[in-house]
Image (tube, rainbow, N blue to C red; front, side):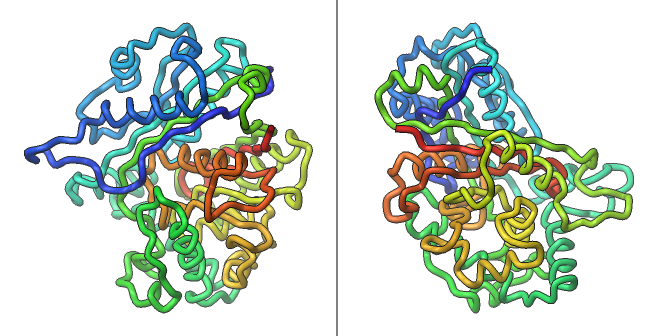
Length: 396
């Protein structure tokens, strides 16, 4: 297996770009995606002829174009010997696209591969969007009929966490404040205006105990990551990022388990994190920052605990104490995360890699983590029923 590297990235800002069907002017999905791919390839400093594979996050069914990956290969006039394909895995979809693109390079099928994804959803009527979310949640015959949404199970997590560890809601709300402060320094973030804990607590409730600022917004966005073998990356003569370790675990549960379990343990993240740290040959204490796929405040807390970034039951307190913010012990979600950078779900995981590439190549601007060398990326499926973890390292 070849050593791997990230050599370039491209993305749109996160926001609202999707056009309504009857709008007089239309945003074209393929033109947005093509611009992002061109941006990433230019950032990598490679030629079009170098690209040997292209793995897309499956487009949501809100897009008009089907088989989007092959459409893009045609639109870009991009013949390839490696795979041209789409993958899907709910919130992990973009992370899986990255992982599969890595496989194409690691297995020697090409020297350069693209992982790309586009998510458009902000012009979709709320009832249609809600119906889609409900049908993603649990067993359609025995659980979906009760109207559960992903935010509902995260709310269950929050209620259980507050009960078990005697954590006040305002302490949990500090995660949203931290992420908004980070997003204020990120030019591609969807929401950048500063907020306070009191602002968070003043918002309308979405699902008890999570209010508007504690759950993700509707977001559009597109991102592309360029992956190459490390030898190819070194020959380019520019900064790049090595992929040091990788871990994955699926606990055999579809979103919500009908069996008694510790719903806030996030066992998949524990096991995948151990694999990734072991393969990288480092410990948690060696990390300089982490970018965690976390749609809600509670998700970031529980994932950080499962990955060993903080002790169990202390994640919310650590955020409130400033340990996980820029300048703290271990900055988490310096991009602003799902809550404030924004959350275009089937592209979100790629935005995490964009942020870590910027941090590890020293181009994160005002949110730069000083001397950042080692970072962790976490992607999830369901209620962290599956976790995909990567350890990244800066390279000259």
